[in-house]
Image 1 (cartoon, protein in one colour):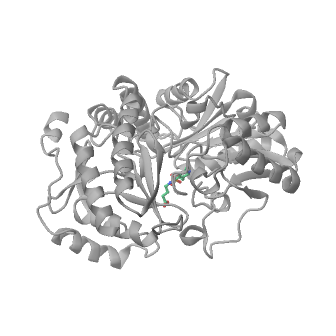
Image 2 (cartoon, helix red, strand yellow):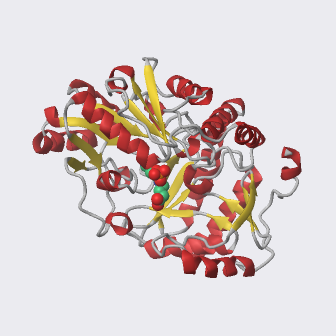
Amino acid sequence: MVSSLESLVGTTRNLVTEIPGPKSRALHERRKAVVSAGLTQGFPVYIERAEGAILVDVDGNRLLDLGSGIAVTTIGHAVPELIDAVSQQVAAFTHTCFMVTPYESYVAVCEELANLTPGSHAKTSALFNSGSEAVENAVKIARLATGRQAIVVFDHAYHGRTNLTLALTAKNMPYKDRFGPFAPEIYRVPMSYPYHDGLSGAEAAARAIKIIETQVGAKNVAALLIEPIQGEGGFIVPADGFLPALSQWTTENGAVFIADEIQSGFCRTGDWFAVDHEGVIPDIVATAKGLAGGMPLAAVTGRVELMNQVHEGGLGGTYGGNPVAAVAALATIKTLRDRNLAARARELEGIMLTSLRSLQKDVAIIGDVRGRGAMIAFELVQPGTKDANATAAKSIVNFCNQNGVVAIVCGTYGNVIRLLPPLVITDEQLHDGLSVIAAAVRAAG
Ligand code: PLZ
């Protein structure tokens, strides 16, 4: 079953029609009639099949995937272990609702999460469907466990699109605009953004802590919620020492440190979790995306003494930890481990940083190249300044798309291009993608 799928997809980028091709254009017309206009129209090629780092569209074009569906298909597309696990589970049973009649895979995922997330303390987990839902539940648990209300979040943060998580998300357009009112007791403080603020991690943490203590009050803080490397906000890597200092402050002040590892987790940054890089041990970790290889699954994992304060029935949801998604997570984690994909992420980091930094020397529009593992980005600026250049970002992504490369924009100012290749991408494929990016940047510069 598996091998017959593999033979249908080639390993190289190859365009056989204009982009988008005629079948994609026809589908796009159908879409316009029935799909809400509120959804972004990214790269309108309609996908029929995928394998590894290659997407095949309905016109037969082979595209190189440097987005992994926003950091989801970390183990690549059509991984045999995942196909087998999911197929067998679909045939066995698709749903019972874990709260009604449970099944083993849910428990096994929670065992993996307890082992893999940082710290050797006792942990329990609850499973959900989306990253937003995981973050919401992490906040609920932190408030219940501390008896406090205030949640501290950061500039450029992205935590989701539900009402509570929109309050936690920083950027107005397009996420929040006119969707309010938003939930109260959310406080935003400055992020460490080395390229723009020039502060050390300790200095940036002191700046944030001063605001928390004077404007919120340490004893009111239920949780500090942070993406260890910010995703949608622009792949902002805080200066060394920033996360440890904040983590220490929460410990000293009885607040919960929640790491939103939804985009950065599961080997994406070259460690199981981005906080591992500095040995930070969060009280609660929210995960999703790369956890289950494309099946919808999210988790909240935390210290048993926090998690288990919740009364029976206080957490749940019809589909959370669905058996098909749960076996997909087990197969994903096994694949990450067996193929040592964290190490592969670090190799990809080397290739991407070397290529982008040498490009940066030749052009005036790349202000910063940053990231870790296979979570790498470059920030586009007006030449000679650090002012955002969203126009360049748009034209670079457009050039990439026209040449069959999927790359995604991010950043509060829409001027950062992020590369999130599947960790199974080959060196040849990655060099090919980087050569298209280089051509795109030169054309834009
Ligand atoms: N926390 C750190 O990156 C999702 C958003 C795509 P959901 N990021 C992609 C879009 O435009 O909607 C994300 C994240 C971090 C939370 C979330 C939310 O996860 O699964 O999209 O709800």
